[in-house]
Amino acid sequence: MSASGPASPSSATEAVIRIEHVSKFYVRGHEEVPVLSDIHFDIARGEYLALMGPSGSGKSTLLNLIAGLDQPNTGSIVVDGVDIAQLDDTGLADWRARHIGFIFQFYNLMPVLTALENVELPLQLTPLPRRERRERALTALSLVGLSDRVKHYPSELSGGQLQRVAIARAIVSDPTLIVADEPTGDLDRKSGEEVLGLLDRLNRDLGKTIIMVTHDGHAANAARAVRHLEKGELSALVENR
Image (cartoon, rainbow, N blue to C red; front, side, top):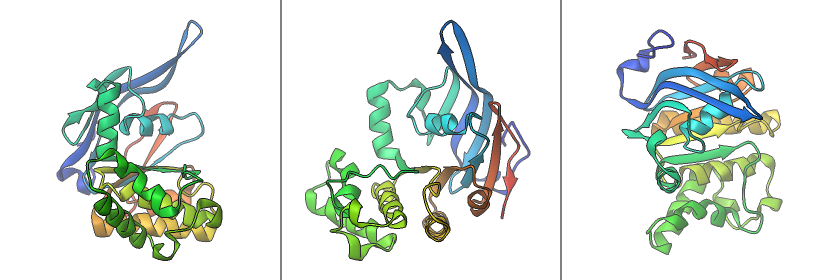
């Protein structure tokens, strides 16, 4: 059960993420600026959670902590049995490569690589042979409906297609967790709906655990549950469906 709110229907299932008494501050001059204050809650395996809050509320910081891009000043973050707050930089990099799929607002694709090469890129860090890497990348692009765009470069794709390539890249290594930071923030409404529909299918059909940061209420409603951050403090969980 989450310590910061009532149990959800999914709380009886296995917690893939357990966050306990996490705080984060940054030092500005001689002053500590608090960002997150004593955050503690669980995320069930197969959950699709939206984190909302105004600018500066700490939602992206919390996402970065869960994804191992940053480390808390206090507390523990246990993902699939590993306390990532205890890992050094090398350990974190290896853990991220094996467990986290990233989706960014501005795609973060390599402009000199084709869609297929961009999706295959995370697999370059694995011992998989080239043929298997290529097959996995093709499968991921097929799942997001881009089998006919594998040889296209980012400059030849629309915003919605770029984000679908980014999603294919995020799922190609079969990660434990998908983290999405404003995945519809740079898209028009139609493309945004397509991306939200794809995330929903990844969650429902493939059982992927997804955490999405968004300021868009419509996008948040597409998730299965929502939490709000306000001045570094987390609200109780609200189930959408």
